[in-house]
Image (cartoon, rainbow, N blue to C red):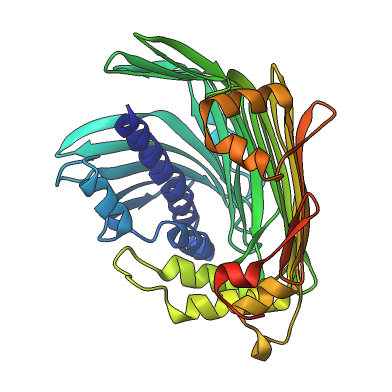
Length: 432
């Protein structure tokens, strides 16, 4: 089952990344930036052949891509997702060009919207010479500025043990504005394999973002799943809805991140099979230049690297030296027996980069937090795990108004839990 899901995700990702680049290539050389922009997002895909026939009002093209040497190819082969014969991705496109593309009205989803061209693309895959049609069509519009919007439309259908409802997604790529993203809806779908059925309800995505300074992505994103379930011989599990949101905003030379997640009807063993989880966190004041270097160093690492690259360590040190704050504003688990909550706020002090040390960062940091767990849940945990009563007996959790509570703080290298201080230096074997 996991193998089938991964194959579907890989195939959809390839289609999403390639098609905008093809349309940009067909819409005259002035849009070469969009092709490069797409190539940056799919560096391991190689254009092996192309054919382009230009007409007065319409042009037609065919592009073929293969997975080149790299991480994606290695993963697909090692995990048995494909044999040695990797698939060839074939994209056939009709382009109605001109600032007012009258010829596009002769086809579905045609439009007279001004631009460099409108296109319709179909996709197929060839596995060892055997073609497989992709059950969807891309309708694309290239604006006067070169910005590309490509809309994927799929009617309800099925292939073997996979069935789906309507899909309507728009992919956006604007190389000039460094803006990219995806918006739209995916209808419910189901996958059956080995006596197990995975069913996912309607999915909504809204994530159009901007590639900013230092290679950092900014802007909001939202992901919503109506429901998800697994049915097998042992019964059925159903959860959802699931909502995930995020945002990133520059504030001068700093960048702030925030994210939130809520999900209902999820198992929380061994306490309950029906829990709701909410999470809200913020990272504020990251030094953008240091974070960009850290991200670039991490992206450059490979599975063959036995040691952490010095550049990554230096970037991490500069990021901490610049200081930032972490806020877990909410982490709650709702159960029939009550709601467990945790909050945590931490501040990493800014210091001169030349004077930075990891022990110094720990000793100069401050934090405070609180954990609250309903007594019925704690009583269940104490019956299931002998170490839990020990923690309670040491005073790390104390009973207050029907909840086991832990108040904690960090300052000057000393952790205080429910009023009991513990210096960290002796525990870590370092001197303050």
